[in-house]
View 1 (cartoon, rainbow, N blue to C red):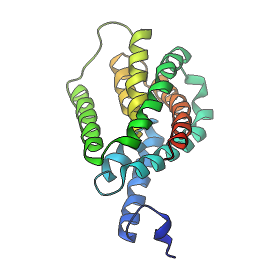
View 2: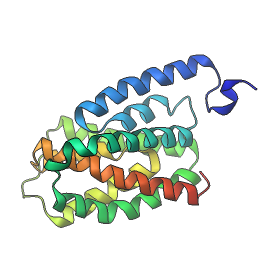
View 3: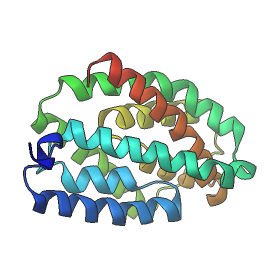
Length: 196
């Protein structure tokens, strides 16, 4: 048996390209606290099986969060973390279920619309007028948890919405690291339950 028989890539060129993408995405993740999944899934979902890519990048995100928790623990905003987590855990399980049942074209379409919406918000320099509140955090956690379960790409939404709510970047980074450690652990429990 060949080494590639154990992987979800077809040849060594795909494996090499995947390794380069993951390396670059990991550098981004280390600098800003998220991004590995967005770059990994968006860059590979058109030529690799999305389900496997999502599992790999979520595992890498989980490990990265584990390594980063100690360094950011002083800057975690526990109110934000709690509100994001309440809705994010439940919606992540729903997202995993969609990851299992959706066809690849629909899955890619949902990822594309989601990323296009975030890019539009960022380019328009969208800012909330009112201070952040529990309802907004609950909604942010719901959307981010769902897309984390669906494609492992919830972090960019949390970062965009918290930045638009004028939360300090150091608190966003620290809170996102811990939030996604929790949500990614739930992802794996839901993935195992769904035989992913």
